[in-house]
Image (cartoon, rainbow, N blue to C red; front, side, top):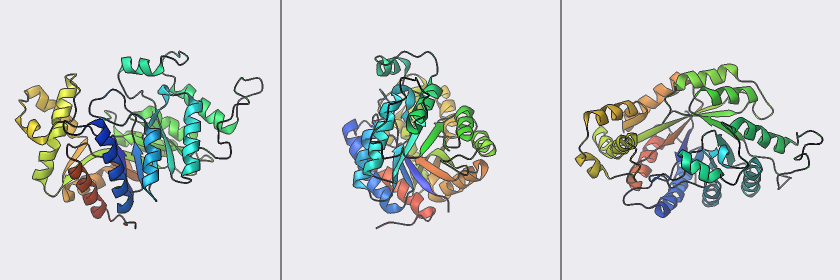
Length: 337
């Protein structure tokens, strides 16, 4: 059966402040470890009212400390926000402390709005335009000692020097990251849960153009998708009301914590709101576990994904736990003691 993993944004709701959301992530990670999930990745977002996950490196260490088997990583570190040397050192430290359990997922976007992005980078060297590729190359050169003679970074080493960087994954929501991951021979994770770009096209392109590397001999692609599973279709639809309301508000520039299903049910949606929600629902898998499993297997077949990474943004933490429990049983994950 296909491996399942989790992408966690630490949902902030009208009843769950950010501090509680982070502790809920630790609780969910413990559960995922017991249920047999393969990875637990945490996101990097800034200045978003419904997302508590802003410092993945810190959360990775905390999650790895309270779990025993599951791989823990970033989904991802938004490289434009960070000096490559700092990324290298932080993840070498994590790999030293939890050997063989850390993943370094890298993203191109800043994970926030332009003003917040500027605040994150205000004291860094100014670089014009999309500088992800430059930063990515710098990270690889630091790890491989590849700077030429005379370069100021020639003698710079990321410490601890006796530890290699954990596996690097390139994250994306378009064809660009798929092409880059294929060209350099790294794992690829596609963000189907918010991408407008066709997931099948990106995933198959990655596989077709993959070039083996010392890091990875054959292509390995993860499909990230949003899921809300419950005991019945009706219950799943009720829970998903929070996601529907959030999307309708976000489309109008209203960024708020996730509202309760009851508030969502009472909201006065306009016809335009409902059209936007319907489009978003094409990227959200909602329903009883039988219905959810059927749709996920269809997505897997279409994209040839090696692994599914599930993100579940709902109001109630108990409902989120239950959704992942249902998925673990449906996909025959092997529980760990």
